[in-house]
Structures are given as C-alpha cells and as structure tokens.
Length: 421
Ligand SMILES: CC(=O)N[C@H]1[C@@H](OP(=O)(O)OP(=O)(O)OC[C@H]2O[C@@H](n3ccc(=O)[nH]c3=O)[C@H](O)[C@@H]2O)O[C@H](CO)[C@@H](O)[C@@H]1O
Ligand SMILES: C=C(OP(=O)(O)O)C(=O)O
Image (tube, rainbow, N blue to C red; front, side, top):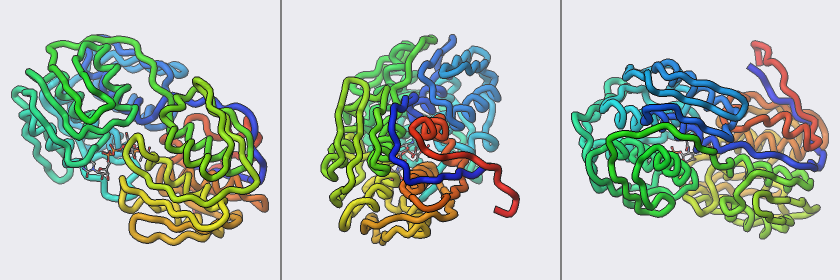
C-alpha cells in the first residue's frame, strides 16, 4: 500500500492528455462478452478498475491482451461460471456482468458489486429490468442468481434515471427476442459510447443519449474495434486543479460539450476558459467569486465532480453551497478537508463552504472522488507536505496521475505505507 505526498503551492502549467473514460471502459469490456469474436478497444485508461475487469474476464475463460492503451478481448471460450466473490467485489461496475452474462448465457451468478460505497447504492432498477425481460432473480446471502429460459423484449420505465441500470438493460436486451423500450433512461455520454460499441457488434439500439432507448434483439453479435470516449471526469478534475492552483493548463483529448456544466460554473466564479475542438485551456485567477452548484444527472453538473469542486469552492471569496441531487450523502471528503483547515458544514444534501486558506495535514481518501478532492486541496497548500492515504481508491479512476501532475510542475510523489499508518 502507498500514500501520496504533495508539497503544494505551485501554479500548475502545461498540457495534460486525458485518457479514455473509466465509466465507459468498465461497461465496454464486459459488453465484449456478447460477441462471438474478438473486440478491440482503443484509448483505454490505465486504471485499476480496468486491470480488475481484465482479471475477471480471464477467470471466466476469455483471452485478454493488454498493450499500452489498447485491450483485446476474445470471448469465444468464455464459460458461465459463478462469480460470488473475488475481484467482482473490488469494483462497482462488476454489475455489468449481470446483463452481459444474461445476454450471452441466459444466466449469471455474481456477488454484490463493490467499489466506492460512500453511501448505500441499490441495484433494484437493474433487477427490475432483468425481471421485465423474463428473468428470475434470487438473492442468496448477497450472491445474486439470474436465470432466463428465454429473454423477451419489454417496456421498462426506470424509477430513477440510473446509468448502470440503463446500460445493464441494453446489454441483456440486445440478445432478447423482440423489442425493448427503456423509458426515463439515463443520458450520460458513456451510455452513447456503449450503444455505439454494441451497434458495431451487430446490436440494433436507437435513442441512446435521450430518455427513450429502443433495442431490437438480435441472435448473434460479432467482434469489432472501437475507441473509448475521453474521460470527462478526469478532464474536469484537471480543470479544477488548474483553477485551484491559479495555473494555466491545456486539457487535451476532451469533448468540451461533455464539460459544459463545469465550464459554465468555473466561468461564473471568474476562471478564464478557452474552448477548442478537442481541448480546453483553463487560466486561473487570483480571486474567485463564491457560487452555488447543484449536482444532477447529465447534462447537469456531474456528481463525480462534486467532491473536487467542493475543494475549489474553499478557494472562493464568501460562502458557496454545493448540493448533490444524485446521491444524498456523498460528503466523506468533508471531515478530511476540515483537518486541512476548511470551513464546511454539511446540512442534508448540501455542503455550505466558506472560503479559506488550507493547511497541510495527514488525510485519508475514503473513495475515488474524495481522494481527488484531497489531492486538489493539497496542491493549494503552500506551507508543508500533505500526506494522503487510501491511494488505492484514487488509482481506480485516474490514469497516470502522479506523472501528469509532475509534468505540470507539481511536487508530488508516492511512498510506501509503513504498517502503523
Ligand atoms: C461505473 C459507473 O458508471 N459509475 C457511475 C454511475 O454509477 P451508478 O450506475 O451506480 O449510478 P446510478 O446512475 O445507477 O445511480 C444514480 C442514483 O440512483 C440510485 N439508484 C441507482 C440504481 C438503482 O437500481 N436504484 C437506485 O436507487 C442511486 O442510489 C443513486 O442515487 O453513475 C453515477 C451517477 O452519475 C456515477 O457517480 C458513477 O461514477
Ligand atoms: C463513483 C464512481 O465510480 P463507481 O461507480 O465505479 O464506484 C466515480 O467514478 O466517481
């Protein structure tokens, strides 16, 4: 286990290349299960969630080849094996094995997903979708068994516009008999990316990116090659880093449209932003105005940028309010920010943040974006070294973080954790 050491206070300058999106990659890799031949994915993020998925698929009998930012998945020898424990517990997105295995074999046995459990994260809408498609779902002490003699298309209205449920239903319904309609579907860009891959594999999906998705089931799906969309959350994190350190950073390989809600909020605070076709330049300023932010489903402000943005708001003059309408209690970063001198009060779904200077401290990342929030905080501190443990959470989602920050001029390094820490 390691910890991150950050000696902050430097304005970060230069260019950072953004990798492919974690939340696409962890859906596209299991989607390959539905093909009869090899699926090749380019622009792969080098993160631990991807490595864990490769391990899971190899355990099921697929041939997986990782080379640089490419993954090749040959699922032709894949078998239907129960997966109640092991690596599936390491990541949230292992829930996609339910839809993908159900589509391919008509059955799946898998443990409850792991990953960042900053609050209870139910999967009732995934299960409702599978049942509507004709599957029987049983839960035996946390091991979910899903079985369908035959999957049949259905009309499914999601109670909440869940990213995971929308994709899981798309995966299973691609191989169902007849047509499926998902109403109140999630509209995040990663859903379009998954539909694009599935269609290239032979599926018939229309409407991804809108609240109504139509899927005509097909009998067979084939391999293909696909490039993963850029990671809008990583990109947004670097935009916030540039602003928080009063730096000047060109964030390259992004789709600026995916970051509109963040861009607009940063501009409202007084950050200078220039948008190009595939890059965004963020120029920090000496002072920022406080703002109120509401994290919502796409195209609203992304909840995955809520914790990083909360840190930036500690650097604004006056009082800001950050509210999260996707998760009711995603504020595990706040007690750690308080250790660094932040003035934040959590009330229900909101954090009330008073601008102040932060100090170095020993803090702990309790989930992926809480970790990012602490990295940003540490980069603003100009008097001492901040130590961040829980780095394994940050490694789930940030490709090449330490080197990227160093290339931008930050003083950051990793140290091995001694047992007592
Ligand atoms: C691997 C992946 O893509 N993870 C993302 C995905 O997570 P994930 O797919 O888990 O998030 P969802 O969109 O499903 O969850 C949104 C909200 O709906 C609730 N809900 C969800 C499903 C369900 O069956 N029942 C239910 O009540 C959740 O508790 C949450 O409050 O979208 C989230 C919201 O943008 C992001 O924070 C995660 O980074
Ligand atoms: C919550 C996140 O991821 P996951 O759903 O994979 O835990 C995230 O990426 O911020």
